[in-house]
Image (cartoon, rainbow, N blue to C red; front, side, top):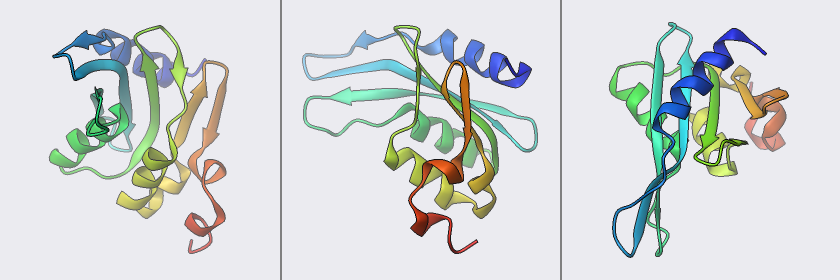
Length: 130
């Protein structure tokens, strides 16, 4: 496995811990770690609610990255509290693409043994303008 992805999984594993917040919400079922082109790692956790007001871990990690004035993602992985790698949902894939045109080439771990480039995970409409 790629050394960078090993490091990202390790960082995500540290914060992937599902915790009940209330009868309506839990957090941390999924954690995300991303590596920027500048070599910085940013992380985030998911928030799940019964009324769909939650947020994906990828969004939280991206927002942390943006807060630190970076936009270009080299590699990204989502890791569940159950110990499983999750492929990003369509909404997360679109977000990664939209915040920086160069992110079309972001390497995304979709399984422990499978890495894909973001452009291969998106509908044609998101890659044709390149």
